[in-house]
Image (cartoon, rainbow, N blue to C red):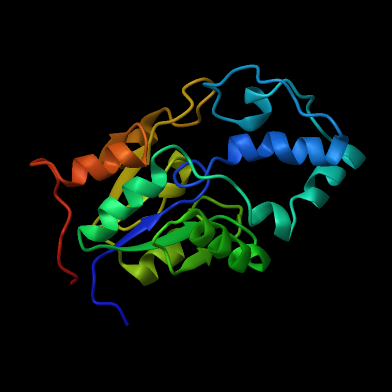
Length: 209
């Protein structure tokens, strides 16, 4: 068992470019790659010029989000490099993803193939309710920091865990309102977070409890 302090990292929007992968899965489902409408949109259905799906067409898209899809989501720019900065600084990196558990192994394979120094993925699923679906996993891990790009996923995270918000996709972002008080630090991307950890303002523990 590792004795390194842990940093828990979200996958989509922190490590991997789900928004870009969405265009590929749309093409696979419907035979035509969509045109990019707004590169600064938070949600992929706003980023790409696509229709709002329901019924059979929504089911067709979801059917293509299979093992193959979750094994091949491309990394975000500089995310692999940033993860190595954190790993080389002495942190164990664990991916905590709101993904169906059946795709946990595919997600780990995706991260390893992309070059991330990550050996563990915890797929939590997306549970309805006021508490983050990731809260239980974070409680078990007891990381020094939890990095996510979706503000509601900080609900119920223990105060001792540093909560770092990745502020990507400003257009249509859900990361607004009083819940921003839950956040300890905000960063443009994982590279910016890794830079922050090396600066004088970083308050993360460098030794496990």
